[in-house]
Image 1 (cartoon, rainbow, N blue to C red):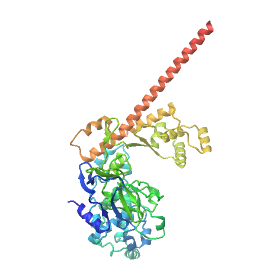
Image 2 (image 1 turned 90 degrees about the vertical axis):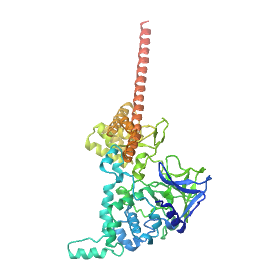
Image 3 (image 1 turned 90 degrees about the horizontal axis):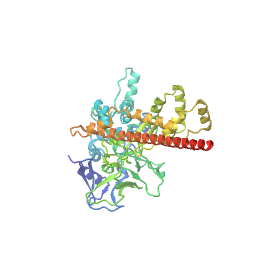
Image 4 (image 1 turned 120 degrees about the horizontal axis):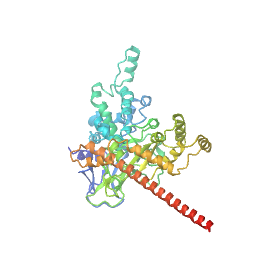
Length: 499
């Protein structure tokens, strides 16, 4: 069933404006539903306007106020995404009486993201960083410890606890018969995936800091859409990371995370952006950033993410022509943990912990990124040199309060090479094996997606290792030439002396 007509009807009735002579919606073979130019669209053209009042967030939903803001904060619903997930669950449970019913009905109900893969399917992602970033266990802990206590009546054993539970429960807001329908773990994951793939991070204007307003979006949080401020604004733009943030991020209030109707309909592809969402005082405006020819897809941007992140967040990958003639994502990267350098160097455990802790205190990361330019990360070089310091050198380094300079000599290059080889061995198959498998047209979607991610990362590792080998061979040849020249010079000197 095509949900677009009902969505547009809701959008227009809610005060939104779409230039229907310029923008249409269609299903594209490789990326599903998206926006298409119905005629040539000039640069700077406003494609649609979204009133701030129809953004869906914990600020605009009435649920937090019904529960009580003190109770809401006591339950830590203002931290992370669990509060917005509950708001979306509750708004869905209201059916047609919800302000956002026409929008919520248009959102996807199933996802191809690894959050919903089986263990067998996830095994295909071994070696990548995708599985470790899913945060499924953390999500389910939030569901059990934060969300459920708000929506269901507990069954304590003693009378005092039972009376307390009754006082805190709100069957007027969460009728018991709705809980197994709208507030399940499965739906929790679906709502979280909707936020991960479609939400925006909304920051208030300075003029709004002391007033309760609907808010306005100025940046994307793990979203298909990127947002720019007007030139006179100075607020920063940044991307979010994961559906379930780490502990530090969880401590931050996230009332600004919002669902932005219609803006989340646009697809994205590496380097293809031709439209951008701009922040205004009263609304958000999707504006063309270049000429868009009739029939072309209207693309926003994910921020040119690697395929591992595209798969984790959105359930798809980019396959574009690469400079070497192959297909892949130019933005692919390989994550390398500090543990690999430690394992290669086989350093003392206590010494390693002390130095890694100091490295982190200095602003270093425990994960470095190898990119498709095949340049060895300077942070990896500095870290290796730090771990190889003698005790005296270590004490001097701490006294100077500066990490070692990323000087890449032959000994460090040997360690880098061993680290990358160890990283490559973390995958269960070789690059050639994966390339051959990709030619199998009977592959399942999940296996094909996993193969694309793996091959992209393995190419970077293998090509970087090949580059290192060439560098080392050139260095040996250079040493040999220098030694030969030195020997010739010694020979000439000896002959002169004999004469």
